[in-house]
Amino acid sequence: MKRREEVDKYRDMPDEDLQAEAARLKESLFRLNFKLALGEIDAVKKMRQEKKALARLERSLPNSYLKGQADLQGFSYGVVRFDSAATAFAQAQKVQSEMLDSASENNWPVQSLVNPVPGAGQMLGGYGTKDEDGLTATLAVVGTNVGPYLVAVIGASTESPDNAKNFALTVFKAVAAAVA
Image (cartoon, rainbow, N blue to C red):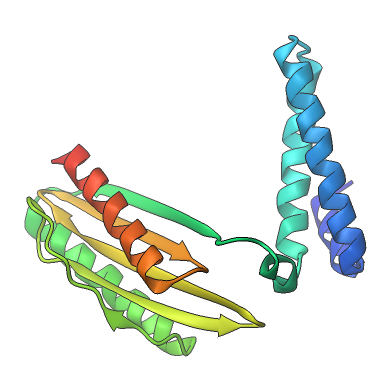
């Protein structure tokens, strides 16, 4: 099935059917992991297909599906090397400006987040909490230069703003220490 057809199929399915299909795909992936462990090479291609199908399906699930879940947390980070610390910091400021503009356009209230990190430049960051369709989430973004490197981390939590901030800062400190 083509990707677009699959996405359209999921979009038209009722919530209960989407959840049942998600459970079926997870079970299939579980069984394919066993086949892979036993050396069945055919399982690799099927696993890729099932993982992609599950990702497409999960994007189609409504936020109400996520409400029943425990605290959802995650992070993402990026590291980019520039020719100098000044260039890296200038890029960090540019990223901060773009993110604040985006937050403003989407009515996402942002509060400043400033925690010094040894060996890093002036911390640029903020966090905001938003309630959308009954799901409350906090995103915390921190970033600056660590020498010639631009390091940026996004932490997220549905449980509390402190979890998101601590997650982002902890990962930032670990990445900053790794590149220093």
